[in-house]
Image (cartoon, rainbow, N blue to C red):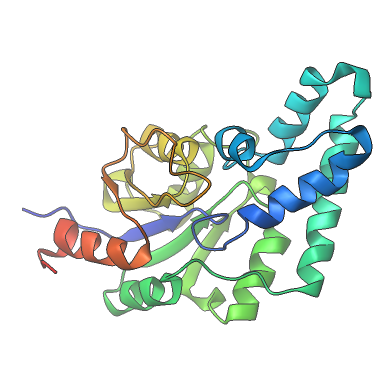
Length: 226
């Protein structure tokens, strides 16, 4: 018998919104005055899916001579990202609207569990006209520990009033998959250019994009092939 799927809990950065290159550019803009630069390969392995607070703490540890303040640097990063968002529209990852329509058609709830700030997330969703698809948002303002801690996913399940075994997490990073699995959810990974080298061995499935994930959900939960 196929398991019953009642909800899909989405990560945001790199899963719903194509933001990693934007975050990388923001970091390098801020760090240029300290003569520090994140190369794409370094960012992919060490920063994709990692909270801003953890990144700033690592910077302060790895570059003690720079005299970095993790608190101030995190605030500056958030401000720069907010400013960028006020100027441009953040694109969605391929297949996101189709996935949300598919879930709505099958009466499967959608939610977001992310380490990002609520304001940045809702602005993007409103711009693309998809806010109404999501029943709840769990953001970094709601938790004390970010991914790979399961705290965010446990809170999402609590708000949805659903058991973990009835929910699927869609994640683009290894840390996100570990968080979802620690909370008891089924997890499907969607690697992209910044996360394709992550270890997704703990994921229940790996798909190239949302279109493939729709097909995977049909087969795993609805008994439909193709």
